[in-house]
Length: 188
Image (tube, rainbow, N blue to C red):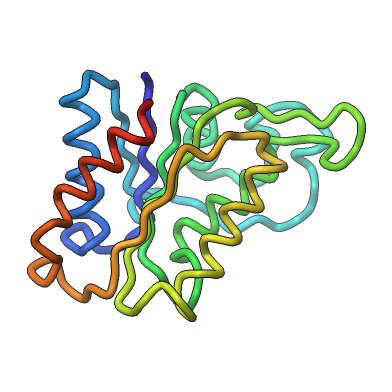
């Protein structure tokens, strides 16, 4: 299986990176081809809602010239897309949110006859870490991810929340096992 991991955390050695690393290692161990993109190192501009991408059926139709089209192309080529992000103010990090907003170009005619998506039928998964508990903290992020599956026409294969955690050294003893189990689940 071709897997694309989209790392939304700006911290290369933070909780999300550590746990996503365990997930990635397990997927590689299972024989999957894993491509890992650290979004903080990419030039991803926010969506301008100009809809120029809707005028042409191309990933490169956006008027902005940045690295987003290459990432969207990798999403279209993957079998599974793993979105990994810590919770920032009840939502995704700015890096991840900017990319998700730009996926507007991946689908057309949403809620109309002929609705199509360049990532239709792909599996998606969500890995989230947070300094607080799930309730009153991460819930809106998971709700947003659930809702985006419909315009994308994707299949959510799993989700995992690890919290409350503030630093990698404070992750629970069984977190690595949870990460490996998650990798096995989403790669089925």
